[in-house]
Image (cartoon, rainbow, N blue to C red; front, side):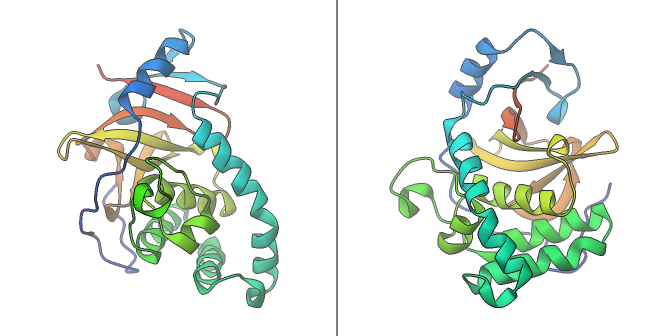
Length: 229
């Protein structure tokens, strides 16, 4: 699929500082704990091993709880825009509502571009004083965030638009060009994975994003470890 750009923002972004993510070491530990069942053609052409235990990723379990705790605030905001806690939250919920009538392809593009533009990038060490913190959407919109926080708000936005949990994963990758860890959102449609990245607004198939080597990925009930052929 060609890059999708419905005109909501720039196709490119300045390269932010590196995300401080534990990636390769955790992926190896996860791989050792996973069962032998594997999917031969996974994300970015990897072989992937899945498990329904999320215990190896406590920061993801914590953010799932915070996402659920934010639901009451979002429901109130959706019912009455005046009750939204901030202008950014109001803009986010308006974007989600306006995208409901679009095709899924256009929804990916609109959500990606909105999230990439709504707040500036900031490292977890500067923002929270820790090396790796995963923020729920309202935290992200209030305080800004880094690469996995952009992926998380995109994940929640697309859930609200009717994408299923099974279609989506937050993916921790190694960027072999910049030699650092990074996080993106992968969305599966019609047997193909599309990548929503905080570094660019174009939505591309994973096969077209050759600089990423997946380490592990996760959704609400499954985690995957990846090895390359």
